[in-house]
Length: 74
Image 1 (cartoon, rainbow, N blue to C red):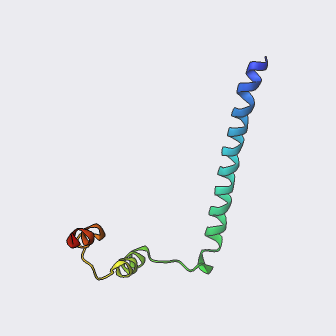
Image 2: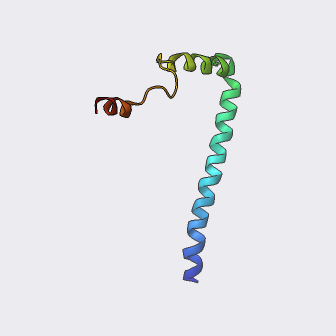
Image 3: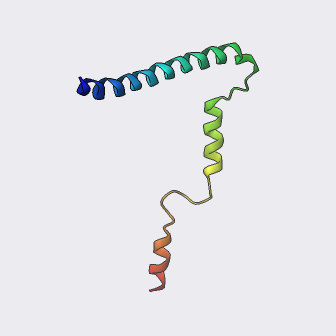
């Protein structure tokens, strides 16, 4: 009997966590649908283009290797 308790109680705990997470997810979905017009939604395509512009440091990819700088002095 005690072996079943050691197996069943942790499983019930995990199932409870899973069910609770599903309920929270449903609640968040309802809240998002209700308040969607108040949110400031972003266009993901525009954000990726801005990120690409920010990542341009003026050095072509693969042309600068800091380890090579030390080998030139030798």
